[in-house]
Length: 179
Image (cartoon, rainbow, N blue to C red):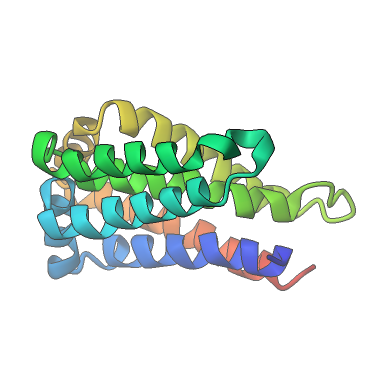
């Protein structure tokens, strides 16, 4: 993945999340509030994250437990399948965390050893913040629900957060074309 694309992807994602918050779109705000416990979001996020993770397991090299990849694939596939039955609460949040952690590697790999482009640090900072947030929310997914309750208690909060995310997304989109 090129550094331009790797910087543009988080920028567009931040714009997609920030603009509805900034504009206070009622449908988007309702979707944000419903996201943590949404079954549809759980299937999309956790299902997508599971599929991506299982793809990585299926393509393990011999040095990375490649001899056991069949067993690992079956074991992790069972864990993913039983997650929908045994721990359905906040599965969308956990799935989004899995997707963030899996997406971080190709994004950070594109910026590795690119010292002649110091503006890459705008993207790297956002990705590392996303990793920290994903680890925290993966362990305590109900915190996202609590954050949304706090965020939407006053319209100014959601507009402020939306404004920041939109501005940072615009910065990333602009930086993407400077490499």
